[in-house]
Image (cartoon, rainbow, N blue to C red; front, side, top):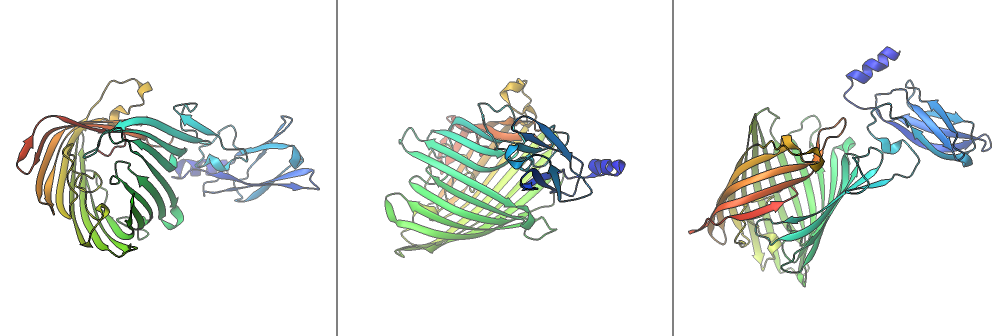
Length: 434
């Protein structure tokens, strides 16, 4: 029997997950019942420890031949201080947050956290500077809540010294693996991604993959409330439907095609209406010592009336048109066709481990972006060199985790219509957008 369990433990691609369900009283409150079960199909024997207020420790063992089971301890429930499954960490557990009735601690990094604890929340926070295409320099404070290596809540505070404005971004994510669904809720204002003076609040529901057993197609729908501060008549609600088509995973190149259509569905005064559509094709090719990425974007906005900026396209938006042009700030466009490409090679820096830089993922790259902007008419090109330094660490049983990704680009050439500028300019961020 032991041999069978050990063989299953070695050959399985899942982790054990014993769970504490409830603590109840029995025998006229003179004994304590502890209900436990296994959340995964990999069942291994593991200790359940009950600690009393006087410091006494009692131990029972879970039986892997049973899924749900009740353990009886000769201790009154009022004397129980804490019950914990596997206190000695004898097994790898996929979820230690369900192992105990004790309050889940919260650690901070920088602060009292020394690693990503598998039984405590970790809040990673960092102040940094950011300069993105078409935006002024901003001072930001970002934080992220980790539940071991999983995360749900991310926040950002933004200050723009030149204008004096203060912005924010909040993002909450929740996955439902049993139905292949994910829920994203986001609210942002003046955060270097929304337009100046705009507040955007949206809810996105995604199914990934759309069809069980065929992982190539994802589908999502989004409801978004756009508000322009000080202009109540520009507030409106939009609905969007989009999909992403992935190529089969290959050793050298992977392709991704995405398309979305968004349209205004509720405008209080009925003064405008728009339908905003785009297509995006991305590729990522990698061979030993070289990476090559491409990005092609085409968008069109069909509109009527006096339209707010949210119904148009920002040519310098890194998620869509991806024009890494530091200056000037270009006008919003009704139609555009853009392209972007970059080549990167590993940059193995002899840095100390205390800096938390992942040297095997550090890169140096050259890039070139450009395209044809219509409504208004412009032809643009920008190019330069860049540096990427991922910041993170190794986690036992997992892939290396990247917390931040510092990117520094030097724009060495820019051309807007017939005007050429080769004076170097800098773009940088800690979120991996560049």
